Length: 210
Image (cartoon, rainbow, N blue to C red; front, side):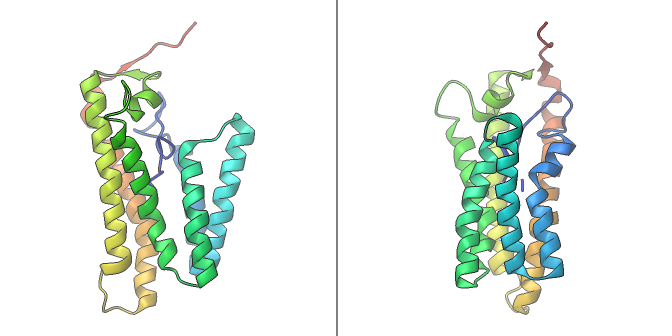
């Protein structure tokens, strides 16, 4: 978170809550917010279409505004176009329920893979220009986020497909949507704050260049 997202889903700044500022958080998750609203007022299929359109608009806006693409937005768009498209084509919400897991696991692979590729982890390459920490701490933070993405993906699978299987399918979908919007987002915020508290004493903020 939501994976992200991260990486896109997940940038630092000198004024941010680890790992992202509040306004960036809202921007990164606005397709999810629109998805939730469309689902509550209509159904999962319209909500999927709205989320696809919102993710595309998000990528285009960042490209026009900043002249570049943000990795997490692009990854999320790619996955939602595939799984959202299959949801609409086959009229089966199983596909869109897999989307958060796939996104989180992609981020997990990227983050954990960076432990073994190159001299710096993904998070250090993203944030090392804004703050300094010992290399060993960067690696620990990187592993923590990689595992968080992986576990988030597992939680989504459990809630989407295995939680209370005796319930009516509509009730289970309602619960999954609430978990996707509030559960995963809440977990991401809580994990961010805990990480910030754990590493705060190691951080040295770089002075702005004159």
